[in-house]
Image (cartoon, protein in one colour):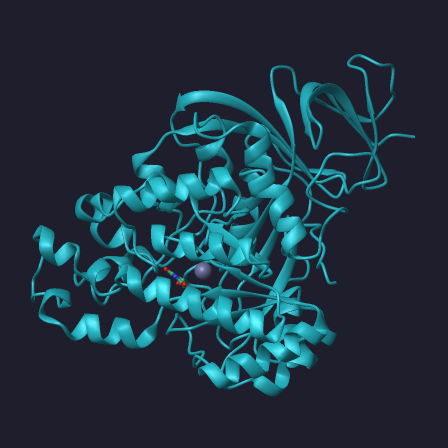
Length: 447
Ligand code: DOR
Ligand code: ZN
């Protein structure tokens, strides 16, 4: 007996677009049947004129629980997720306290339980301060690790090269991938101190607005990505480079992949859709780490998306309060902004991306990278019933936003091209016709 049928749409399967009715029973995709087949079910979603995609797996979010819930909280963030067709999020460890040992992981999981409309998994921190805690984090259920090679929101001291090599020998044995925030802290310190990197008091001219970007020059990313690839190869550890922002770093990943290093590449919609020009027009709202770059970098990232160097798109959803963002000093303002609701609406229908490639980047790639494939990330008989029903609507105004602090430079500057009509999480409609439905039934995903 079916629980739900999605009728009249075109399903995006690993084989391509397929007009089909999707039959869901007991939380899984029971069948794909010819459109109009007689299937009885208590609930039906009319997907006429829509695409049916695997639910987006956003493997890069900062949902801020615990300790930073003035910036974002899980109820708002997971509602924003399902409103954007996201059915699984993987949450970063730079909370307060950081997710740095098994106890902090269990405490975070306890706070999230019953508050998530989407499924969720957690990264454990990999920092100079918790190197002995990695096996305990693995045993307690992280899907991977996150290392910040420079400073970040919440204090996670970066490991030195020796510590990182040793840690990656451990994570290789644990069989878990590490996501790397790759910016060289020493280069950033030097560039920030240099006259061209400092912000004059009361700044506001173009030079001072671009100073944050100059304080984190491309070479800071290129060096850190090169070092990460080298050490990961030496340790035999799987890694993924977070939020690639420069042509040079993408080239390093391309070369490392070609040489057989187990490295995956991520970028974010803002690096594909914006440049440093948006920092000039929007100021602190567009401040993010790594910073928005040149048009040449953006174009190189599109090339890396096209040739498979980049295999995952994450939103890097990292909201701050409007007051924090409006502190009046770009160098002091926190970096990051909301995004989890908008990756799919902003990119579906972009002329540079086929629907199939978009599904590879938003669903299949993240599922493969973090151990969720083949249960998640694809539409096929027997896979989990995590689905998004979307209608391409070129040039539409931004839909209602559900994050606690949803402002985003991307949404200010680029049109949402698609509308999410329904999101199915674990076989139940979690969002439909512009509103959330039912209780929060997202499940904690462990390896
Ligand atoms: O801009 C950023 N914000 N980049 C990061 O790596 C961290 C994030 C945050 O947590 O605020
Ligand atoms: Zn991040």
